[in-house]
Picture 1 (cartoon, helix red, strand yellow):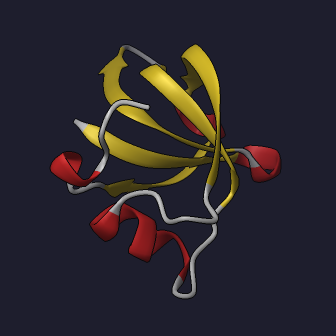
Picture 2 (picture 1 turned 135 degrees about the horizontal axis):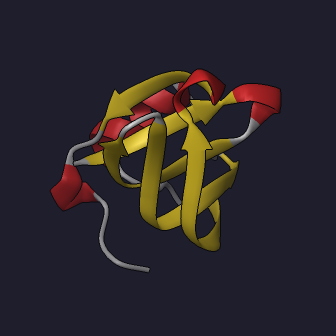
Length: 82
């Protein structure tokens, strides 16, 4: 499922999220370095990247489930492969 994952210490990722035991695994992950929105992360989740959004390729990110602050389901078709 395509999600934005907010992690401890201010990290924000987007990618295909699955859970395995105590781990949250994000494949095809991107770090959202700059949101580039006028209405926050909800706008990104619903509408995909904006002109001013900056995404950094991260590959596969693994987080312990306790490191996840929140996750937001994305409208997957609005997030083309970049």
